[in-house]
Image (cartoon, rainbow over all chains, first blue to last red; front, side, top):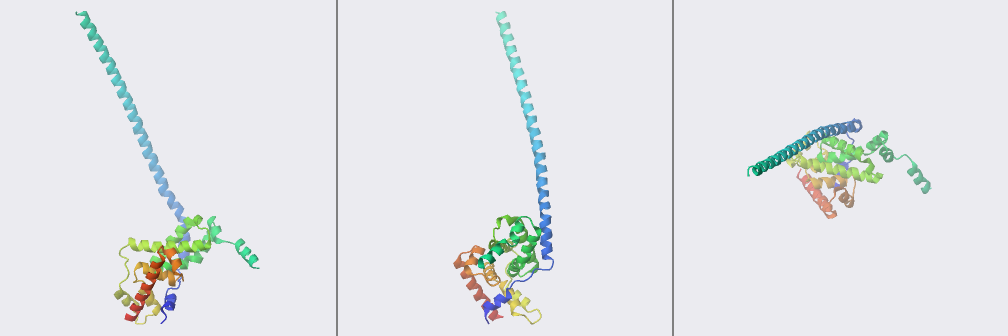
Length: 93
Length: 179
């Protein structure tokens, strides 16, 4: 037996199942639509997360500004109280 | 005359160029031309028609998305062989259950009606070989490739290809004698 020749015969090319070509061609037409779905979902998710993050950052900034204003008011009040106390102290001498 | 013939060939309809520019009919022509090569590589690797059809479909879908990277007919054939063999090996490694079929099972399968053909027996024996040997034997005998071309397609060193081929043939001879 010539093994080389027998292997060539045994492993010769075979035709794929019927309708294989139709299946592949149909899949090539479906693919782009399937690709757009996750892309659209990812874009929407990015927008939602981005919007939420931007609002959170803005609220935090406003909070920081309010806190600074309160601290400034307290510093001014404290200074005024200190000046008044000094003034009373001088008058009482 | 040779010059005229080659000019006609160059100017004639080139399905690859047309497919690259989005012509669906041209892609169908490429599919018709190469489907038996791709399907058979996977079929002889797994000895499983359904799995071979799934792999071949995935390969052609990948081709559809990669047409711009293919610059000639010979490049296309090399690309298809390379991608198909890689997918076969990837799938084999991903699904550990798809190990080489033990010889006892093959002998049972090869004699379903007491009248086995040598071709069928050989295909089933090839399916028992280790994956690298199986790959080399399929590329050698299905596609008629020489060791250098197999080494380029399979990404193996030339000496490794020769060694796999030698061992595979020795194993096949031994298994045939034992049958």
